[in-house]
Image (cartoon, rainbow, N blue to C red; front, side, top):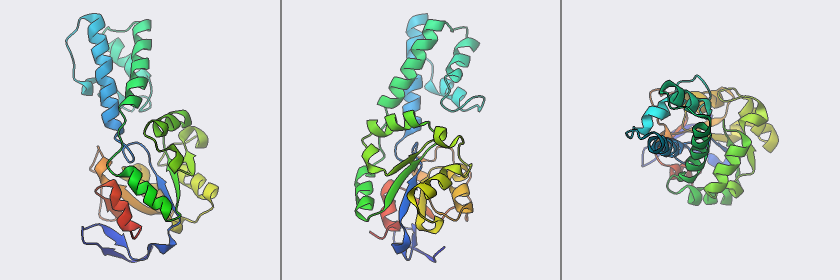
Length: 242
């Protein structure tokens, strides 16, 4: 790893970015605010249930908490089923409606972080290869990237159903390196999770940029767990020498 220096705005900056050939991006909460979109989807589900049952409105965090339990996957509909069953709100038709609301509203409420497109344009202008590595399945990833207008920016998409694993398993990173034909030292990984993005990437010898602006579950950070800190997405341009 090359020597690091501190730039004027406090971002640790690579003194020689010329060897960088590719950037691998996590997707959710790195390119766009996925948690905010999920919360809006939960809000709409509870609103629907309230209309059907004549119930008082509840906070979306109440349903969102079910997705955080780890009982099922972060995107699994079974989280909605459990919520409804535990409150004696479950019907087969209502459950189907809630799942449809969840998918529709989650997608419709996605919003890019500031300056994402402009920054990606400049990175592409440098001749860098850009890829997405995500724990979403391929169909969901394609839908999200299409919704926010980013699909054509990326040379490669690596999704959970393509590798059969999820991060922090190294399979996503290794798949991308082989597919693009680059070495770890020529590659930067950008992600919002220390455990799932930064730690496995560093073990493989990749450079790492921690998207602190998107980390909605902080507390994992240590002094040596990443190479660069991004306070905004456009801070990537500091690392790239622009």
